[in-house]
Image 1 (cartoon, rainbow, N blue to C red):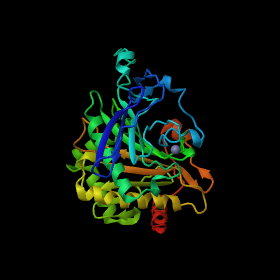
Image 2 (cartoon, protein in one colour):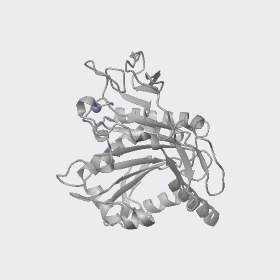
Image 3 (cartoon, rainbow, N blue to C red):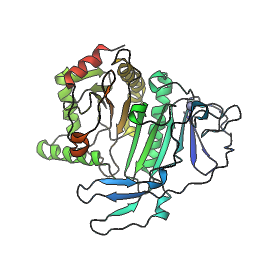
Image 4 (cartoon, protein in one colour):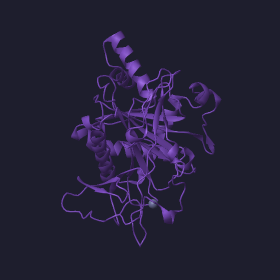
Length: 362
Ligand SMILES: [Zn+2]
């Protein structure tokens, strides 16, 4: 893999990841007259739940459903300049122009430790990951080689962002489909470097610590062993990875993909584990697209869970992939019970979801 770091016109970093070793010309310059944006993000702590909430009121002017010929994620071609100055690319990562979190927020926001009014600058970084220069292609259309290059880019970003001052957790994810709220049709993912541990990870860490205290063992290792011992919810098994529908799945179709050997984050994967990942993950995404006969591509969220900087002993790297589609033409909305109380009601049994995900194997 070859990595070339450059700057956009407003000073944001843009990084090309190329699979080929050897010279690749990545010297194209961003010719747009862009002014640097100011990030006024704040992170407030909810005094009632303890959860952190990011307030990023400067983002209202961000790009919203642009037409295809104004796509900011296509390469710069035919006299039109996009976010990517090169006329072609493999995988590109760049700083979001409208970030929820930014290192510059430290200079703009005054921290406050007043009881019940805990507030800090939204220090962190938000990056966009472009998987392909093809406007129409989705992740499931990528070759194994390209998916591997994306994995290498995620890993590189995890290592680099984890080392930034104040960053507590690095989160790589993909939102796919307008139903999820995606505002750019060109397939892409995002990476958030949070200055706090996210609420879901706080909960998961507490559960893992309780399990360790009660049993002396690691929760993720016990969980994976239990799913494999009675594989009714196992969807796909490789030499190094296992995918299963969780026992208490929240979403109609939800799959968790774990490396068989527990590691804290993407940087801990060995070469054989990295080599097997693309085939397994692409197969899962293609099965998701075959779940609903004749329907438009399945909207999904793919979320990498990585151990935060300060809780590396118990949490295991894994990917959670889920769709909000229940059946053709019907979405699962987060309404009163879920949004009001965080109490999920799932209309599809996890065991039948797993059966269906095995049926639609390639
Ligand atoms: Zn595009």
